Image 1: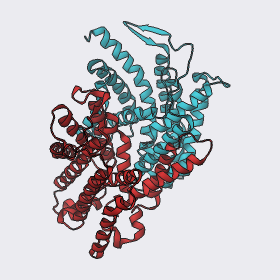
Image 2: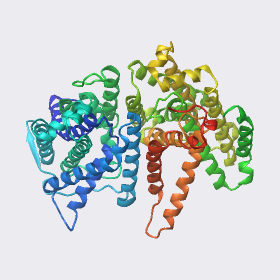
Image 3: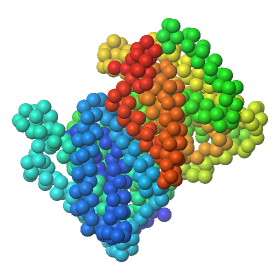
Image 4: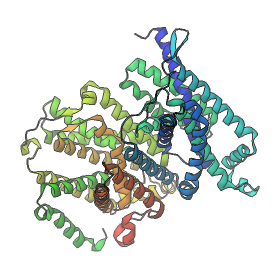
Length: 291
Length: 325
């Protein structure tokens, strides 16, 4: 039975998972808002970042995922920047279905290259604090989940500050708002776009570090996150930061409550259903501007 | 196919009918089946994705519906699979109508339509994975009883001809789309939906009709899959891989062309086989399968970037039927 205690525990666990989702979705929504690219490779790139965390943790380096966070985030930024410059930028000016197909092709390549090089085995990392439980009221939550929740929100806050306070952030917002006008006032639009894509992927790097202590990685790990991230972004409104924040937390809770209510198998239906309903009933999402 | 295309069609059809007599090994016939079956599914994608410009990322939802409807009717309720077949197509038509009516009523196009089809396919997979009637993740096993009356054949040649017949049917439907007013209306919608609407075309109705047709045909393929492999599970029926394969077959050959999916399926399999063989020659490669799929991904990017009309575009307009803008 769903007692209030169980519901409360589900709510807390959902919120904790939602923190990571926020981080993944913020990257996706930023890329959409600035570049108007629906980045289908988002899940695959997250999976790659998770492998990076795994290999850094493994001998001989033995780097703790939390210590690796700045390294992986910076590496993800560089990878995203280069990927945009080398590939995506060339194809991003056509029809949006085309960029969707290009990023789909990219995700096929990444997934199968991972399968080829890393095999299909599921990899996990062992950290001493993984089993550490903290009680929050009647609910017990694993310490890494709390850390990931708090850290994800801090990263989002920093990103928000960066976007509103720094010159680069202002340039990004200018490009998102009015590409032609930004070019006219002397903003290097191509560079700003590559930076935006890099930041979007950097969010995935941070998410990967926060995920790995409680999650696993295999070449198909990204799949689970693709639909979740798209659902959040559509729910919150394409391109909206606030939307990604609230959407991520809502979806985390929806997933957790559906799992409790409908069971582990059928409970997964919550996310695609929310996705379909939002697209059908309110495609602009909670905070999105009209398309 | 253009006005002068009839001799080509007859020659091509004759070659495909003669193929199992020229290449008699089970291996060759199975490869032929796989290519024709992929071409068939790709053509059903092409009818919506190519001719009407409704790029779907979740076409497998129709395939899976057809596969499960006929498997459940046959295994659980003892219906003869030949009889279950039209019901599978009917169920596919219904799902096509439902997806179309809902998505188009909400005005979804382009990427949004692609994403919602993906979500419908995922919904199908989760339902198949959790409902008792589909036996969850275990899947449904069809008892082997190779009699033609049972839609099971001992000789693989018969499934080759089933796939060929389906392929011929879908190609005929696609060809009709280049000749009928319905097809012309779909082309108008693909090129410029607002203009089509302004010309008085009921774009909602035409798009729903198109997806219903595509869904019915695709679902019919599901039955053939179940009868050939005697097994279906949620990942085979609703996995994203098959959606992507249909889309690849349709795009590589040339979206919105009559013969595109046949060319696409042939080229895709050829490229896949060659890559696998080359990969297996390398001493340090243990599993070359992912390599061929990496090549698929690269081919997809290359096609979208440089050959938007697909391989049929290389032949010029004359043989590519309707041209994509």
